[in-house]
Amino acid sequence: MVSGGSAKRADELLLVVDAGNTNTVFGVYRGEVLAESFRLSTDLERTADEYGATLVTLLARASLDVRDVGAVIVSSVVPPLNPTLERLARGFFGQRPLFVEPGIRTGMPIRYDNPAEVGADRIVNAVAARHLFGAPAVVVDFGTATTFDIVNPQGEYAGGIISPGILISAEALFAHASRLYRVDVKPPAQLVGRNTAAAMQAGIFFGYVGLVDGILERLKAEIPGLEIVVATGGQAEMIAAGSRHIRHVEPQLTLIGLRLIHGLNRS
Image 1 (cartoon, one colour):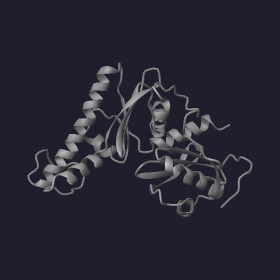
Image 2 (image 1 turned 135 degrees about the vertical axis):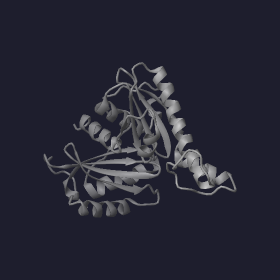
Image 3 (image 1 turned 90 degrees about the horizontal axis):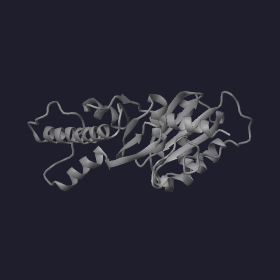
Image 4 (image 1 turned 180 degrees about the vertical axis):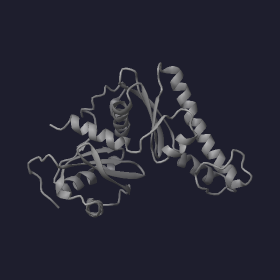
């Protein structure tokens, strides 16, 4: 463990943390360059010491020194995990973590009835998409849920859409149809399956691509000039391959947004 209070150095590292319902992703930035990232399962039973020991080992394998971490920023949609992440940041990096929450500077007006209801990752993704690609834009984040977040032509967060994730949808099918079994969720070789596994894969994949493209078509009809559609999250590349509307895939979108927001709040 390290102690805080050291003078800020030009070469210090920024630790960004994206805590989701299924996975927690840790990224390490050196300036604007993502030096390394690590994905751990989100586990509310895991202690700060357990997260820290694992993370320190991973940093060492990447030739990164825990003592060089000069700041920590966290986006979390798992509130019970936040105290653990706070203890992790203070105990192992000697830093008070900055949480993306109401009151933090994002540089993006939020046009939501109650801004506190918006998941931190959704705002972070919107900030990153506007920075990388401009506005208007839609971010489709394929996680436990699939979220569609809209940046309007004025560059503001305009709201979003939430639907069940593809893996949750598939699990519901397996759980409630007694004669159906689990199959890999992946693009099928052809549309019409000639066995049960292939038929299920076709229904899951093309059904979900239809859901995504159907929502995007409606958004494009409603928002003038909307062409930028950015996908991120675990199944982004798979779904983007079958989509007619997804133009960009950026796996590190949330980490990029965290770096940008940290820069706005550095003081």
